[in-house]
Image (cartoon, rainbow, N blue to C red; front, top):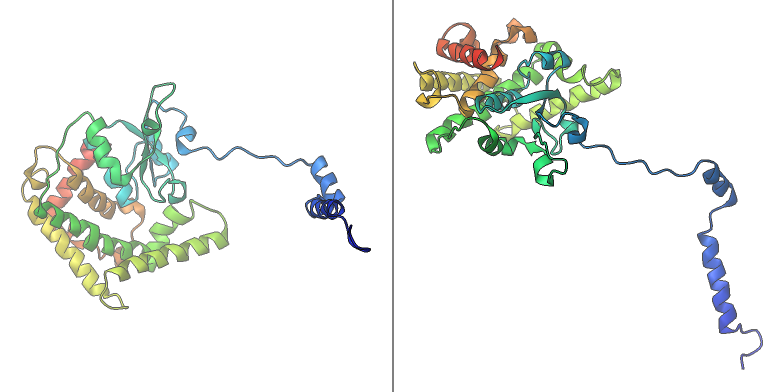
Length: 308
């Protein structure tokens, strides 16, 4: 028998259950609010492949402007232009779609949404193709076959583009005030937002990112600007010597990825419609003064083949 004052086990259990249920009971004012405005779960945002309605065409998402899409114009971004041109070399028919890094599945452009005709395609068939996989994808789906050289010489020259010329490009575009205002701001910032505060923040982020990239390869916390441009000039001179009198690099019968990579820089450096400031045109000065005429001829050759 329980002593006086003790609660029976059953009564104690009931009291605990009531207390616990009261903890999770929705307050009446909140309940009335949800009854009036019920909670709705919206469907997830559609993926890019659903946004591109006509999946009968391959869609390459790049930095470009709406007006340029209609004319199939080259992208104003070197990485995007490299792959845009390479797909043309490989005979991959595609449309271009204006985009930005935030819309990319891996956070960077370009990426490709493959075409498909099946009513129930496999996930692999409709999955986005990132730039790191575009070469392999194009070799399997393009109309033309093109094997790229696989040797140390090829890699050494490609590194000139990926490092010395790219570093000078980053400084020219993002860290040279006149060019940043005239070229980078209207292309990358003003076109993405009309908010003054957002534009200011985006400008600072882009410049900080460019500086961080340059410091990765610098041996000191201060960037030697003179050395930066001397190295880029030496790289372009080496590319000019490599090309020589040939139509395409490495004396190939048809242009390949390396030709596209060189064109991605030479075309943009020679495109005065971008708004480059003449007093800040240190990168590629030898292109404009005729020292590397064969690189200019190469740029014209690629442009006529792909964009005219």
